[in-house]
Amino acid sequence: MASPRKIFVLNGPNLNLLGTREPEIYGFDTLDDIAERMEDEARRAATEIDFRQSNHEGHLIDWLHEANAESALAVILNAGALTHTSLALYDAIKSITVPVIEVHISNPAAREAYRHHSYVGMAAKGSIAGFGPLGYMLALEAALEMD
Image (cartoon, rainbow, N blue to C red; front, top):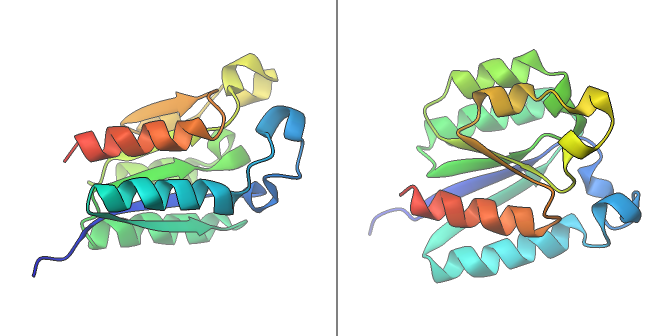
């Protein structure tokens, strides 16, 4: 039996606080709520979701490398504030062949000026922002279509 298709969903700093952190910007859904919806949809497409969160940049980099080593179908990445600061994430994304889809719950372009630049977006295949938690589902749909 062939191994299942796998999509990594990686979440960066402070996203563990979704549901309570600035709900006027990020809403009331938790990461567990988002993961559950994604896993249900992926199951219908015979695809496994590997959903992770870390407040540490190095973990995200290691997981990008892992996704590549496992020949994942795609990586959906919400790097949080590291989006705007991390050349290391940019380099990690550029160093792998697995397509990366950048996701943001809010629309960084409509927020503070320092959020307008995305190192992740510069390296990613595409970006989805401003649609709240629905953005994760839109990214999943895009990832499934890349297969």
